[in-house]
Picture 1: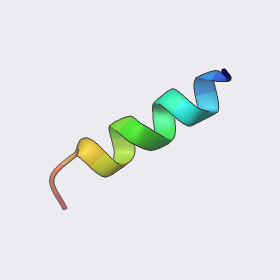
Picture 2: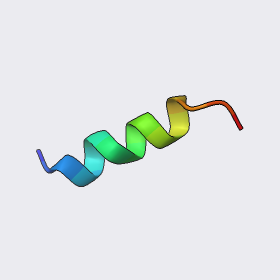
Picture 3: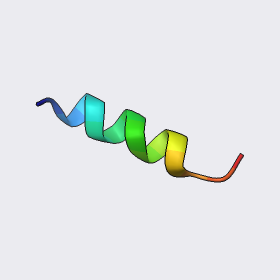
Length: 16
């Protein structure tokens, strides 16, 4: 897994 995937998940988890 790449950090990008984790970062993407974090981005989605973040409140918009």
